[in-house]
Length: 126
Image 1: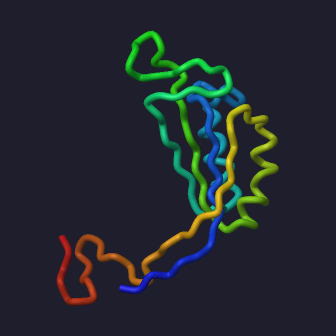
Image 2: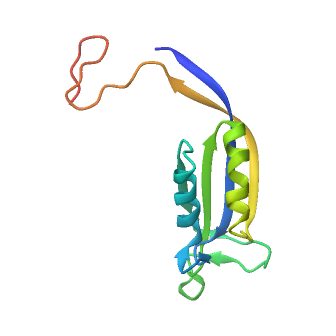
C-alpha cells in the first residue's frame, strides 16, 4: 500500500450550537457555503463541555446548562482554497474563534475494497 501526502490548511470555526444566521444554525450555513465554494469537505463536531469569551461554562452534564453546547466546524483543503473561502466566512460575522493550521493530508493511493469488491490480493470483502 502506498501513501501520498499533501500539504493543506485546516480551518476550524468554534461557536455555540445556538448561533444562527437568518434563522438557520450558523454551523449549517458554514457547511453549505463550504460546499457551494467547492471545498473538499466540512465536518461539524458537537462538544460536551466548553467555554468561550463569555467565560460561562456550557456542559451537557447539567440539565440547566445543556443549551448552547460548543460546536467546531472543520474544513481541510489546499491553502489557497481555504484562504479564498475566508471572505465568505467573514460575511457571516462569526463571533466565535476561527483558526488556521497547516496540516498534512495522508491519502491511500489504492482504493479500499467496498462491499462485494475484490482487494488486490484477490480476497472478496463482505
